[in-house]
Structures are given as C-alpha cells and as structure tokens.
Image (cartoon, rainbow, N blue to C red; front, side, top):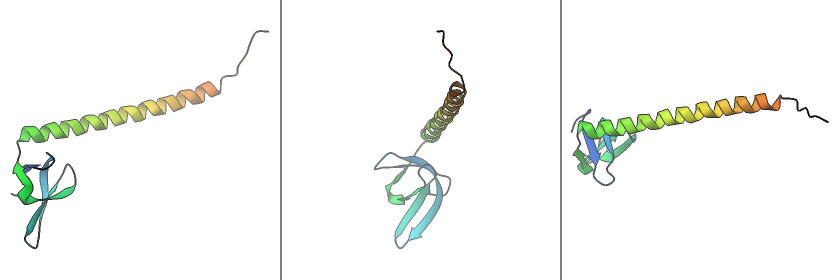
Length: 92
C-alpha cells in the first residue's frame, strides 16, 4: 500500500484515498482523505476508482445541498425583514 491508493475499510465499508502512512511499533496506519482518520492497514482492502468516485460525488452533492439551504435561509431572512417594514393599513 502506498500514498494515493484507493482502499476500503473492511469493518465499515469506508472508501478513501490514502493520504499518509505511519508506522507505530508493529502497526502500519493509513490516513484516508474521506474520513480524515487513520486505519490499521491490515484492515484495508483495495477498492476501485468507481467506488471512490461515488463517495466523492455523494459528498459534493451534500455540499451543494448545504449551499442551497444556506442561500434559501438568507433569502427568507431578507424577505422577513422586508415584510416587517410594511405598514399595515386597513379600511374603516
């Protein structure tokens, strides 16, 4: 296993690209870019680029949704401010 390899963590199915490798005593640890966590290298299996692409696309979709929500929230706040400035008038 080398930096740049695409792997899957056997226990949870987490897929990521190896960003760093550390050796601590007799254990080799690999840092995955998708979780920013180190995993015991003996628990990692090779994964396909398609598996990795699917994870990256899903994360990008989540970021897009978050941006949409933030934009809608801002629009609602601006609309609420405009509505609060309307002076009520009635017939009577």
